[in-house]
Every structure is written in C-alpha cells, then in structure tokens.
Image (cartoon, rainbow, N blue to C red):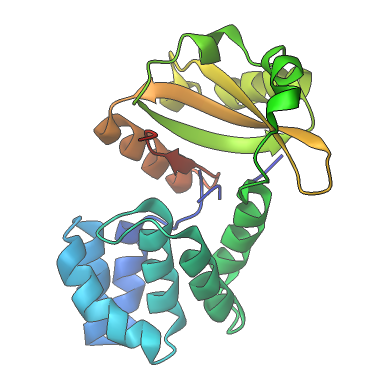
Length: 213
C-alpha cells in the first residue's frame, strides 16, 4: 500500500533544487533555501512564483503548508496548490493529492460509539504521552489490517522506523463507515520531522501529527 504520505509527500528539497536552477535562478534560489530549512526565505522567493503558476513552486509551497514548515499548517491550502501543480503535469503533486485524500479528517466519532472505538486502539496508543508528536503512515479498514501494514512498513523501512510504536486511531467517515489511522510515536518534534523527511526520500508517505492543545 503506497501512500504522501504528506507521511511521504514531498520530493526532498535537496533533490529538486538542482533541477530548479536549470529552470529559473529565482526558483533555484527558493528551492535551495527550502533544502536548508530557511523557510522564511523560501516563502519570500517561492510564494510569488507559485502565484504566477510555476508548478514546482506550487508544489514546494504546498508541502510547506502540509507540514507547517515556515507557514501555518493548512492541509486544504496545500491540496489546492498540489492540484494546481498536478494540472500542469507535476507527478509528485498528483501523488500528494492521493495521500491527502486518504488522510482527510473525517467527521468526529460520536460519544455513543466511544466505547466500541476504544476496543480497537492498540496498547501503544494508550501509552502515548499527551502532547507528543506522531507521524501518520496510512489509513486502513480496521485495527487488524493496521497491525499487519505497520509490520510491513517496519520491515521495509526498518532503519527509519526502528523502535517505533504503533498507535491505531479509529475514526468515523462521513458515510458512517469506520477506518483506522496508522500512526507511530510519540516523538519529539525534531525527530518526527526527520522521520517524515527520510520516508519521503524513500518515496513513501508520512504526515506530521502535531500535539493537541
């Protein structure tokens, strides 16, 4: 199951910076700033290019909104930018749209179903420290599939996910069907961001889940 996983959403900025220089000095400058985590400069340079319709800049600014890098985290705005880039043939933007569709926040689980939902939360979820960061790796049909998918991801990306704890988060879709989010954590913010960056470099998906409150 491959997903952008916002989880793996992004072409590492370091990889696209070189190609960007060949297209536009300004685009290359902005991509280089993004690769070096100089987010303010990246927004200053890439923002106008994105507004002008440059698909690489749209994709880059979209990833910043998706992950809250230098901009307020805004998945809806990120998706709009990905769609604009995808309309111009940006393949990675298309992948991110699919991932965001899978990760789209559902309707809140009603209180009446809380008891039944709790039964499919893994022990790792119960042990999660409040206020910690997590990373979301996918969405599946139920807790059993979440367990098997997490094992598959752990085998495939053992070096990256080594020691990660599975957190299964049930939620109800608008049509009333139940699904389960696959998350790992808890992590400090720096570690969570590093993990997602590495997964993206390996062409899989990862979505940062910020602490509540």
